[in-house]
Length: 175
Image 1 (tube, one colour):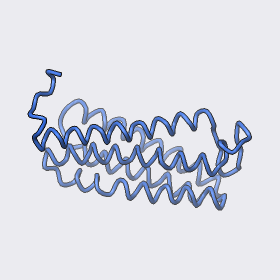
Image 2 (image 1 turned 90 degrees about the horizontal axis):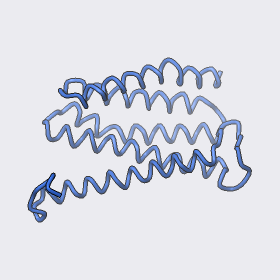
Image 3 (image 1 turned 90 degrees about the vertical axis):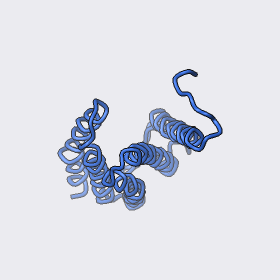
Image 4 (image 1 turned 45 degrees about the vertical axis):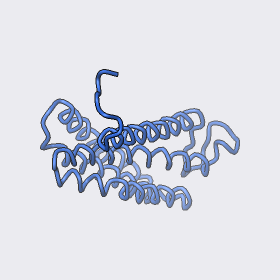
């Protein structure tokens, strides 16, 4: 416990502790959702499941995925917002504030695709995810340090994948 010394009654330490607890809870939500979906995979639009049962229904699978993905987006927003606030970076702070609403809209589009079986919802969803990642990269690109560089490289690879592979795949499925 020598790594982080502070007066635990101070506002800074209590806010850091709260932040850490939020990150832990959001991580648990994301990991639990991924674990559930790996045991009970569902191919939503064509309504294909590996196991036939209520736990493998599209409704349950999409609900679990929605919670997990919102947890993930919230983690990124909190991480980016915290770092931006400490560095006084307005762009990254703005990105952190639009990230969760953007992904919430993406999740609504995913639900639209699942309910209507139209892959147009997935086209819009994946476009929003790619745009969100591009915004995170833009927010972090001016920062120094190895972690920032890794985020930029991984983020650029993700954005390239989304717009070169994932979005076109759903576009062709929709057509």
